[in-house]
Image (tube, rainbow, N blue to C red; front, side, top):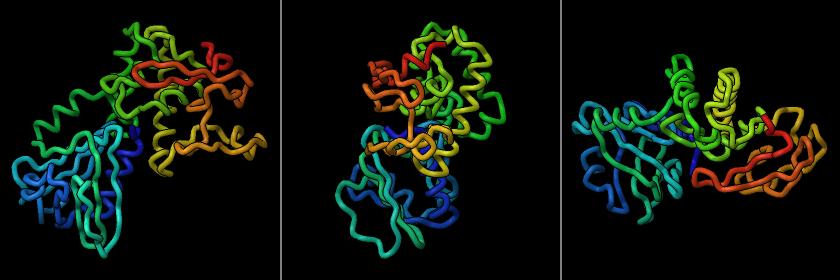
Length: 277
């Protein structure tokens, strides 16, 4: 499932290509046809992300329900292209066509036309997002800490709970805990406030870099393949990481075998030699 940096990148990509201009809206697959017909020819006025949720806003000439709420889920993908626009395949749930570009959405878990109130209800059930300015500059870290500090749940599970913190997925979870030497099975209430503040700040920095590069790299400069004289990672996920999908391989730092186990419905990866706090 795409992590939050991918969704924020998609919001920026939609803004860059379509914002403040009328767009053609169709649903070649047919599952979004009625809503697409209402939006066709209206102006895209906003593109926002919160966690793993994307919202595309349409202008005053759109119907009362003028937000398209998208959640990619496990299989959803968005592809962009330029003119000339090719004929769509029948797997395209939503196609946007602007002056110079088009976007095709395939396989989302959610693609729905929603009102302002329905959109706010989604925001209300999500935790603070390390990529949303209001959460970073406001009380996002404090709101997450209030839930974490009272919880007997493992910190690894809490980081994946979108009601606690929005946008963090399996890769960022594993990597940020490694970077701070934190045992993933420690409970939230066993974290110190200083540890949480460091985790939050690191997530902000790592995920911003993920938006910029459109990939997840978590190793510090002194641990890159070039700095350590090791081979680059070979994995279809891409990006240089410490523990994610490196089960049974030696830790880059201490040589201990990386472990994996199921936690919060996903595979957890950690180094028992480095993550002892």
